[in-house]
Length: 104
Image (cartoon, rainbow, N blue to C red; front, side, top):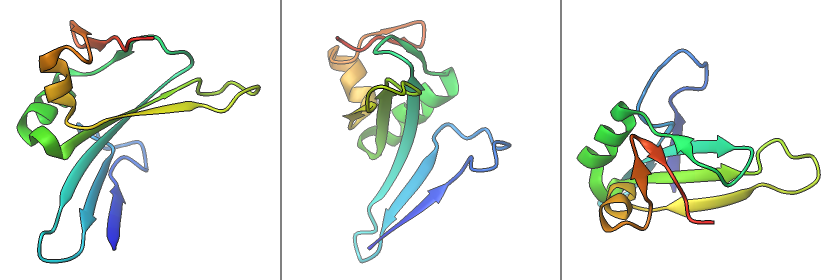
């Protein structure tokens, strides 16, 4: 069983991730999830605070990119990037001045 806490539901908190996800049990798996939505597959802004949080959390930090957001003619595409900071380090997810450029 998982519990999901939406940190910025009211739009007032400025946490470096959107959701905390915990699994009940002895292992108590904990994940931090940041969601980025764009109208296209183009780049999106990843703040320095979010980037630092991803670095601290390591494999526990997940990035979800929702592209095609708001398009009434097609369903959005969701890309899941586990261990986002490792993906940046190996070049799977190129980064330029905290702007993430996903391969098309």
